[in-house]
Amino acid sequence: MSNVKNPCIGKSIAEKIQKAENINTKMTGNLNYPTPLPTLGALILVTTQLSTLNDEAMSGDTLKIKARDLKEVDFDKTIADLGDYVQFASGGDSVKILGSGYEVAAEGSPAGELPPPDNFRIRYLKGESEGKLRLLWKPVDNAKAYVVENTSTPTDDASWKYVTTLPGSRITLSGLKSGEKMWFRIRAVGAAGNSAPSDVAGKIVP
Image 1 (cartoon, rainbow, N blue to C red):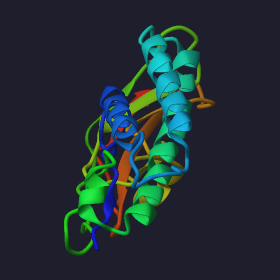
Image 2: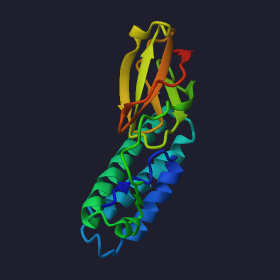
Image 3: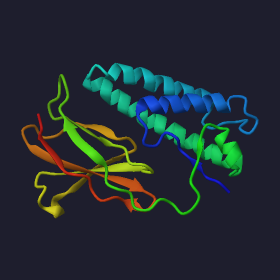
């Protein structure tokens, strides 16, 4: 039996939108998938909303970026839930899975320990950015999610604290203490657990 592979993992928003449109095209009228759950209508709705919000976020407006990021979480969940339906409805038939627009996972055991995220950086936001920082990093293949950690004393391993877990490779943090230099690192989450941490990056909170 074959397993469904989510085609959107590790992809940019533009790539995710293209993948979702392809899934919709292949599943529409497909007799192997008579009752998609979530519905294809729900998939197209969240895809259209994400596309619109992504375009608006290009302005650098903090609220629009946050709205885009929240919608990306909704999109990722919709794609994952629909993939679960494809797994069930296909009965693990690789031909049927490919016919849905999803991909087939490689045979064998789950992926081992993942490498740490690369190209981690921190950016300041435009406009009203007090207490806010923008974190970005390169997606890791086969990562299910990412863990963000922070500290004010990076040389003390015991000082690192959990901040949040998210499915994407970018996040805007708010409510930080202005004037304080904060250090961050990222871990990828895979089937074998968390990766080693990324390189550490730090900035003074505006």
